[in-house]
Length: 181
Image (cartoon, rainbow, N blue to C red; front, side):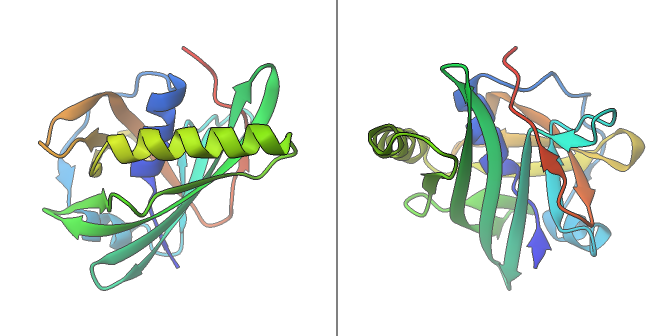
């Protein structure tokens, strides 16, 4: 099991309009190097709060050669209720970045909710993700052993709100609902 899911977390955060502004990125770190540096810490956390020891999203990436399989979880506050999402997708390592494969994204509402809501939400999320095309994530040095991540579109442009901070943990951190800005 290998880590990393910033593409997923960033895409979902962009859709939700969440995430506090992260610090400026330091030196670029090739994705394979990130995997080596975080060996034994497979859980990638974005939106980490050290006071509550919680994350806004948690993901894990499984790697086989240059093929990646990602799974991420997050909680969105929708209509005053916390809705837990599970997102999966395939990816590849391209230009030293982790990149999602369009057409492989899937979203599932895993918390209790009306089935009609789950069906509509899942369909809408699918359309949104597919419209985004290939998303890639570049990793950079961040403060205190973290990484600053930048999500880019197919043209290599950083997405609005596409910068985040990632921390890696050996155990799966607890989730908390994403907070709107």
